[in-house]
Image (tube, rainbow, N blue to C red):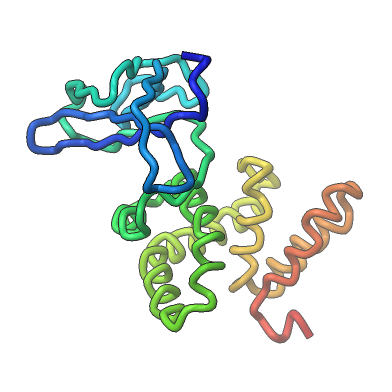
Length: 226
């Protein structure tokens, strides 16, 4: 199959009524009017939300797609999410925007950092597209509505963590989350909280200083900024 020209495009459809998953392959063409009968043997990795071991790094094939269409049983009876092709990174415009936008409604119920961060990062391209649209305000209000609950929750949690840090001298949070947490906590923090972070930042290493100095400008308190 390595001798086949081009490369395949795999699509997946989950049937919630009969609890099956159908995988289909076709040769990818930029010109969507072109067709081909070429068949590849394609290794497909996948993971379920309910899997006991959700290892996203293990890309071992769970299914081999060896024909145009293949239907397999849904292991978890259409419960929870199902992710195909671990480490997927491509964006080719093969599905319409209404599909991911419809899926995005779920994010309003989510409070965990990882899916929220993934969602926000995926908005970059869409925001660029929508910024020149007459519906940009509608789009912005939609996103704000989706994230309002987690925004309020994160803001409260961030300030609580800052106060805990002041009391204990310990900030038990991943390094990659510190900037976001500090910026969010300082938005509505008082002068004592701000000065605490200021002293930490200016007395820390040069690397930490360069990364976190700008966090001090996150405050929305005019008396502090002046």
